Image (cartoon, rainbow, N blue to C red; front, side, top):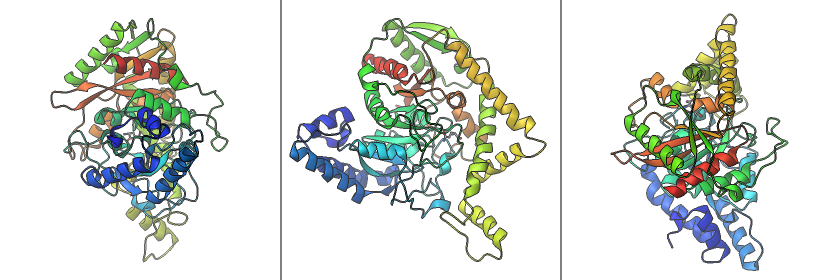
Length: 477
Ligand code: GLN
């Protein structure tokens, strides 16, 4: 049996039917990581001891004939912005290079409680700031579909690990597209839930009003299984919502016939690569063939989304990252002359260039005299964008769009042009600003065999609906 090629759905049955063991599964993944990851760079830290201990716990349950939990023995990887007790957590930054957290992130606690085996921590852009994974302080990630290209970012390691079969599924975070864009670049499924659907407790904060945790999987069903496990109210995160979590898996196969699919012209304008456009349009036609009604909608404020996002995100980042001062966490500069010198040198040596750029932009946007012109204005635009979606969702059930304007670009191609890099998020930041759920699914490849991703947006807390549409597409394809 090709253990590392299995989906959660099939691996779970193999463990339950005793065709394999959780230990064999974990060992197969560790062997493949050892063989293949040196050229991909998806993992920063392996948690073998903890992973194998969990696997043998599952095997003991199986031997006794006990009922197995829903993710029994499933080997998962965790983006390194989610804290793990006793396992180094770096956020891709030198400033947290030696940080060992004293507690677990709720999403990880829930995965392990459901029987999952944590293989290790996955590479990402520093503090999740980036669209190509080239901002990791440790190493870039290479796209498994074409090693000369980026996997997307910031959850590049999470997407690449699933695409390369070195994790069965993974967790990532999405502040402006960091789950959906890498999922699209690597040809896997990635879901950003509604704001409040998944607890952010233990997620190292980038921009708290935009940050989300969500799953990557090989199939829509696997993403649904992962989401079902991590979703739901958590007393440790006051923004986590008291909204009941439906059984996403049970609802997957409900028919989509008669559903109204919105297509917004603002997502098909200038800058969209022709092959990506064709791929997404063909996918929309497939949904039409399944009996969905295609409806044109308008989201008129979309053009302001990137500037609004880069104001709100940097403002919140400048405040969240103030805590990294060399006193409480991780790295501290040596040979300092005074307290303020220590702060300055620690932050200068500990943060990378992109993180510094964002702290400066955010501090500027929040400073006296500029607050109204920038931050306040961006918040108003955010309200308008949210209303755009609310209006559109009065007429349609979901909205579809390309995930990214292009397929995966080459490593090094955009590193010297931050603005070009920021524009990679043009179709994804809107869902973060509005707090609505979005999923990216693979819908084909370009002539160069690079994956194309399509996004499906839904109303607040309508993850079930977007998963259903995604599943209908996946089945039809
Ligand atoms: N690429 C976007 C940025 O750099 C989004 C990052 C994210 O979602 N974490 O801010």
